[in-house]
Image 1: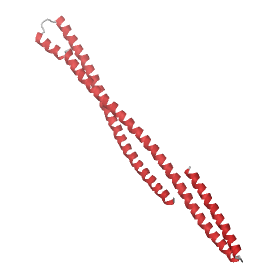
Image 2 (image 1 turned 60 degrees about the vertical axis):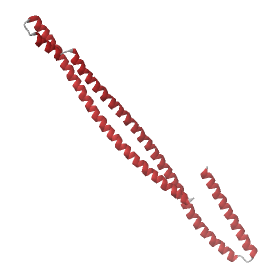
Image 3 (image 1 turned 30 degrees about the vertical axis):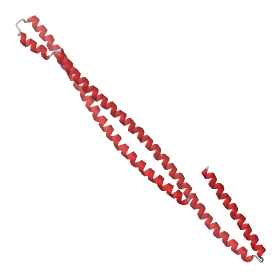
Image 4 (image 1 turned 90 degrees about the vertical axis):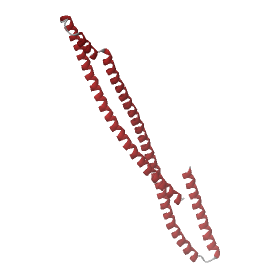
Length: 209
């Protein structure tokens, strides 16, 4: 029983060490994910800034078109080809293509951020599970170490008690005058041993329950 408890303690300590390693690995991965998420947030902010710049550019295009229309109304001598070139540069199709590209980039960036946050949440849950397992293993190890300590103390106490009892028995046997008295002394010691054995069996049964 003593050796089995020692093996259990060593096994629990090994499991605790492995759980600590797993927790450190998860912490490193979680930190990398957070740094990546921060980088994506920066990229997303840059994308938002680009969209704002595009909005300002469209507003300037609208102003340019309005200026051209006003110019046409006031000055009929403007070259038709020049007007067509200006209108083409500021056409709705070009603007739509630019908007479509920006919108696609924004969706991709948002999806990457969403996936990364989900991964971080999963890693965080795993860290909490590892913390719980680590604490449970520590408690189990403490319980086994406590039982082992009790067993050692009981063994030491029983050893000293047996030494004293053997000394007392030897003294009583020396004082006994007849074999009948010696047999009576030995019978008493046998009954005492049986009682101690019964007590140990009860204790073991209680621990197993």
